Image 1 (spheres, rainbow, N blue to C red):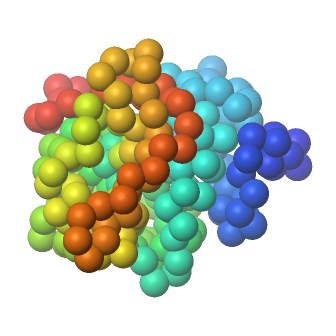
Image 2 (image 1 turned 180 degrees about the vertical axis):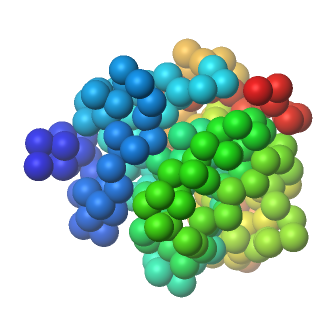
Length: 205
């Protein structure tokens, strides 16, 4: 209950998002000493030098996507798998990509243990998206790009929404929402954030 109260106080007010975050236990996605801190609103380290985002940011990004149960969602940056698991409660299908095979394997094991069957986790260079499954209704990046990557914009359905952090450094980043229009894109700035950078290529575990 305290966990949900903390989320609400940070601006996560969408009832479906709060229900999804109540249902998915963040502790399942953390290892060792950090599992005990699962309900703190703070980012925590995971394998491969990555982090699991703080719950309020996960909630705000999910809320900004405005997902409905028919949607097909692409997530770039599987990480622990926590964000994908939240998305899986709201969307019809989730595709999640990470450049580290170890993270994908470990996240898949957690999805299996939680009996989540509507997530496809893939090891690949996320900056190119997943053309064979495009177009997507929603796209979420959990790593910061200097600009919204062209391949991902191209894979967004007309009327679709992409939420991502953009910024040239890890000190100044902004969470933005991009909506694809019939002609062009609409950009909306949401809030300052801090994420690891989006890196091209496959990672060495």
